[in-house]
Image 1 (cartoon, rainbow, N blue to C red):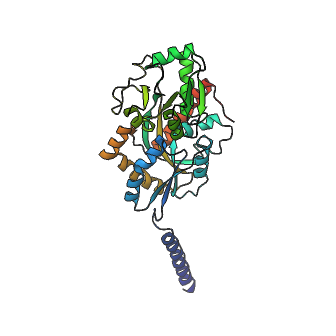
Image 2: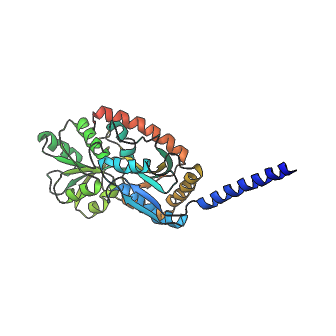
Length: 325
């Protein structure tokens, strides 16, 4: 009888410990969440983070902070999240050019897109737009190509850094057209846009959200968008097919990831909240006005998509012969 009572008391004590521990941990979330953007303010990654941050804060009942960690072509921000505690409070707003491009560009990026991250939610997708500074002696893609062929190396183009999708896109353009241009890398789209506006660089191939307001204001010239359809925010800008370069198609995507090992219920909570926000009419309209579209995926769908994109961009980067130390 005494042994039975001791067993019951032991079980009760264990239950109390488990209950106390669970109570101490609290229900997710019970403190502020940080969205790490691995690039400078002003680009589409930053836009995507801020598109959902305030409403995510309202949905989860905790502050959601956007923190820009630029540098090393996105590797600094990605490393920070990969090494963060896997509790759902530090998340990565990933840019596809970094997430599935860097592993093929760097021998030691310091993180692995599959092993170090839990896929949470797809967020936005965007084609690229080819923009130039004002005052150049051409107004179309064909005229740009003609000028570049006649003046090898004279035109320069900006990118968000060596190996970024802007860099790869411009290399693809040169390969397809037989032209030669000079690469000027920056630490993010924001600084590149500022130098384009200042006339310090000639061309930039980037996501529309980075430049749509400047295009609409006539501060830079848009020559084409790298999609099958014209963008509602830039209805007068032709597609690459309309501009005579039908093979020059590519887009970027922006998604949310957590450190590997983040509990499945936390990932699911985040996915449901973000997906609901992205389906709101005002959020979709804001994205569309910037030249992007919202997109919803489950964590499993995003995981499978990440692997497919990793393989695809590996082939593109190898063909473009771009490598980084």
